[in-house]
Structures are given as C-alpha cells and as structure tokens.
Length: 110
Image 1: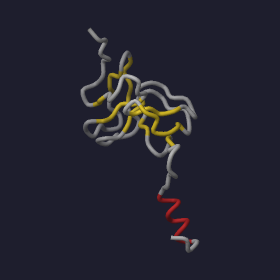
Image 2: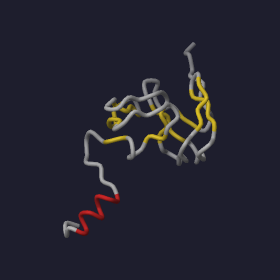
Image 3: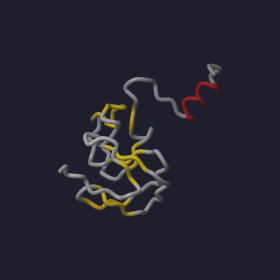
C-alpha cells in the first residue's frame, strides 16, 4: 500500500517527486488549503492549471512538475505560494514579460 499525500481536493500532485502541485479550479487569495502535513493560506489567487508550492522552495532550486525540472526559483518560495513568472525562470527558453514587450516596442525592436 502506498502512502498517499494529504492534499486539498482543489489541488493535484502530478508526480510524487514534484515540489509543486496544480490548481484544478480557481482558488481565491485568502483561501486556506491543506498541503501534506500543513495548512497554508494563499496570498494570491491561483488560476486553473497554475502551480502552488508543495513545500518551501529555495532560490535557484529546480522547480519540478511532471517529475521533471521546468525551471528555477528566482527567490525563496513558501509552501502554498503561487509559482509563476514572478518567482520562476525557465532554464530552457527566454522568459518574456509585458515589460519586455513594451521596452522592445519603444526601442523599435518589436
């Protein structure tokens, strides 16, 4: 018999080794969720398909989803914190933001 982690039904763990879980629905900021042995309160709204830290993730640590690294944390991420472009950098492709696009457009590089 396997030891299944205790997790809120609104979250999904894709692989046991993942340090993030995935939202199955929109979860509003201020919502308390059970992730493993702790209860966390979301500081940001998390949208369907977006990631939530399953445990604390240190800056520069690989973020694992589907059992594979999808990038590195750009800062420390607390358990229950949303994981997205504000605290995650792809190690494989350049990460672009709206600010990058605006900067390129004003410089004539669009």
